[in-house]
Length: 277
Image (cartoon, rainbow, N blue to C red; front, side, top):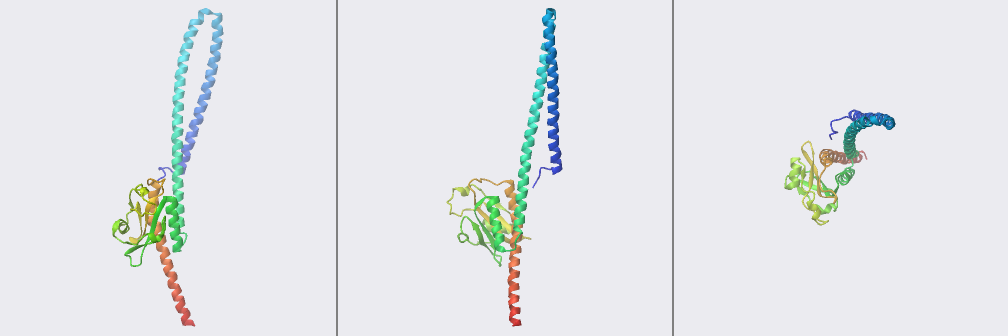
């Protein structure tokens, strides 16, 4: 995912720059406050002198009016600078939240990728895929399909929302799901349309993630309904679609090869045991 074009060092320098500007601004305010205090003391002194010399009162009044005008201008300038700093702080806070979200998304993608390749047990791989689709994508009703050995059918092997028996085997390269798996292109539909359907209804898929290894179809993840509070797909969702299309396919394919090798090894071992008896 994109990190906004900045590395952590650049973000750290940007943070230090913001706080330095804030410190400089506070020092400026304190210096100006001290200057105003001195001017006020001077004004009080002049008022006492004017009280003793009425002839100087008009000159003092004009001087005070000019100073008041200057002080008002300085106040307006300071307020403008303060608003500018507050705006920059707001932008910094918003960017910080964006970076935090990006980091969380990257962490979720890393964990999902790690979990997919943490086992060679086909059942465990399917279990991890189901957990990722539920927790990270937010799917409520979906099915995981695997290509049968002849490569003509997609057979349901795991599901959520309804039992696996509620889903039918699908022909490859036929229909929206079969064509998506055949082409390798992720299919997405309207995620809100399925919310109006009964809970036990399997409507049109809102997402079909083809699972392929080196252009060879391995299976598919077909989502029929998202959680009620989820009405669209985020950038993280599309990243997850891409991750699942590659990593889930590889994990399933590797677990299938491992299971086949284990069966062959057991068969060979049994044959050797018969010969050696």
